[in-house]
Length: 335
Ligand code: 1HN
Image (cartoon, rainbow, N blue to C red; front, side, top):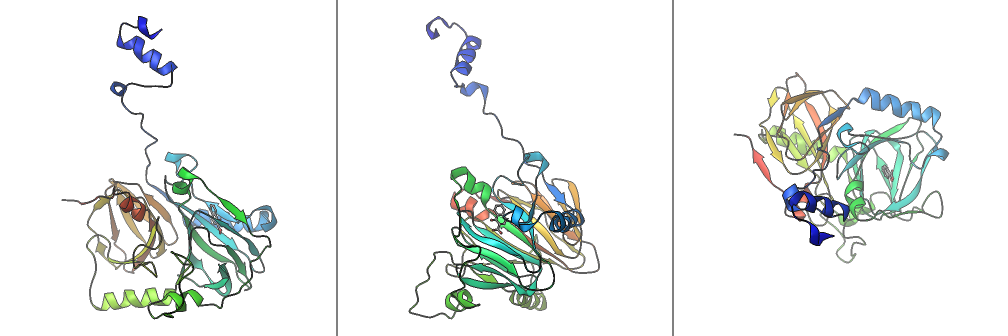
């Protein structure tokens, strides 16, 4: 009986028995997210082994998911990365979900496509392709070589609310739009009378365009102090972040680049697309070579260095748009 309680120890016990707690006992903290690095040699070997031992009919998608040991079954608390392979002749069947996704192509082919909302989108090395929330998508490879890409999703963030997923009624969706449709109807010169079907349309950012922007900035000797030649993939209609929940960036760290340290309240997942270097995260050195993937937790002080004689390129995804929308984004430069 609560009326007979005469001290705080007894009250604490009574509260615990009733699924309550006093402010004086503090707030339990969730598991602390730590940085981690996954070696490409292991991820890739596992993916290729999966092509031998896991037939496509046994798995909706042949992906290897990355797990952060500090968080058990997840890579981060918001965004997620998997690495996917579609072998020659294979199809990853059509579905849609309310988690938004991007594909960053690591090994492409002119004969491999992801079909998004009826549009076949070529998957060539270095291309970034968006599959916004609730858009139909399937992948196929009509070429002669395996096609490999990174999948980035906001699945943990969406999981806080409710994940919805729906299979298409056939393995593949009809291709009722020509290749290049989104680029031509939602680019900077676009048909004046066609209203986009989606607030965030599917879009392809071709590697050739990304590379020419990098080269122009390099020729102009422009770079940022923390991140080198740092590009962001902008939303085709708003000019804002790639997707409402997360953004994708790409940065070139020239030979001998040593960035300034900073920290921010967003989570960032990086992949070393080219070259090698080191990222120091809260004093811990994460040495990366081509293909390695690493995650920087929120508010971890980090800096990138490229001591090698070659350029290095990092692809990344960040939940910064979600943090900004919630007004909890903060950034601090060291020193
Ligand atoms: C998914 O649907 C795909 O559509 C890839 O290719 C990776 C990881 C987790 C959940 C769904 C895809 C995924 C995924």
